[in-house]
Length: 189
Image (cartoon, rainbow, N blue to C red; front, side):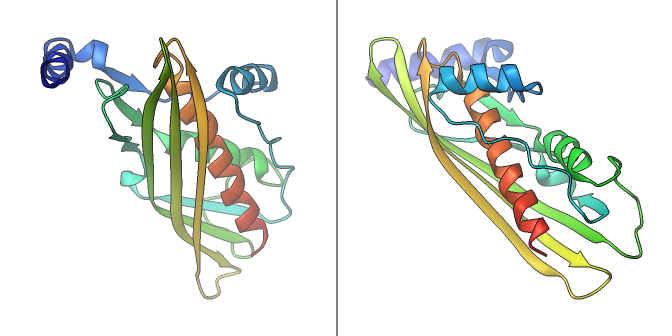
C-alpha cells in the first residue's frame, strides 16, 4: 500500500499536467441536470432575480485549491476558481442583470474567503464517492448600514463513475449549490 501511494505521488510529480484539474461549472440547465444525474445529486433551480441592486467585492483569495482528504483521487490537484461562479450567478440575480460598482441604496456583498474540502472513498471497482463541502464567508451591508456576517456551507455526496473521472463536475455542482445558498442568505438581508 505504501508503494502504491508513493507511485501515485511520483506520477503526480512527473506529470503535473495530468495531476492538475480545474472545477467545471455547468451553465445551461440541460448540462446542469445531466451532470447532476450522473453525479447522483439534485440540482436546485437558479434563484430568480432579486429585488436589491448588488455591489460585489471579493478578496483575491476566494479562488482556492480544493483540500483533498484521503488517497482516493488524491493524485489530482484541483483548483476551484469560485469567484467566476459567484460573479456570474450574482449578476444573473441582480434586478437589472449588472453588478454596480457603487450603489448608495442596495446591498454590498463582500466575500472574504471560500474553501472546499473533498473526501473520496472507493465503493467498488472503478467507482468512488466523494463527500464535498464548500464554504463561503463574508458580509452583507444593506443601504450603507452595519455589515451582517454571511456564512454558508453545503456538503453533499457525489458518486464518481469511472473512479475519479467526474470529480471536477461534482465539485462544480456543489459549489453552485453553495452560491445559491449564499444568494438566498443575501436576499434575507
